[in-house]
Length: 213
Image 1 (tube, rainbow, N blue to C red):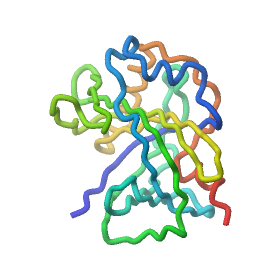
Image 2: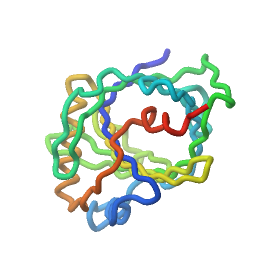
Image 3: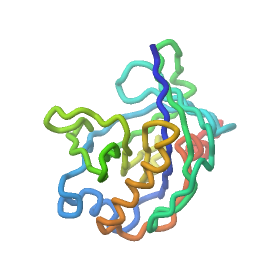
């Protein structure tokens, strides 16, 4: 049985390099008390559809199946926490092994992602230390509600390099917006460097400019 996942999201993109000091700050143990998880390279294959940005399909690394992601609301809520400002989008996601995604219809995107995960089920937001596979250290369980914060280097087939920084909270429709905001507020207390103006977009919206056929 495929379970629907609900998420609230906001994401920025920069071509060439991330804002000054963002990568150093994100990886700093002094600022966060633990290193980020991830850091391994993978290739995701996205459906290349330059005609719309409300539906995203992808094969994630070497995992079986296809991820189906659909936009529910472009302006579900608004984030205003330090330099983290903008509309929060609401998305749903499923994974299915029934659908086929032909390679000729996709664009391969090479990623190196660093991830911080926050548990928002507690009275005080707490970070969950992760390993290089983005799994909790020490065999801890993943929280039922929380927010992923990621910094990702993206390599496109034509040689362009992009960077992305984003929040993706998970839980229920009643909690995802406030949990994303709680994680953003927590990060502002850790000395976030100035977030230079970037392209505010979802992955499907950003990919449209790279999917001209």
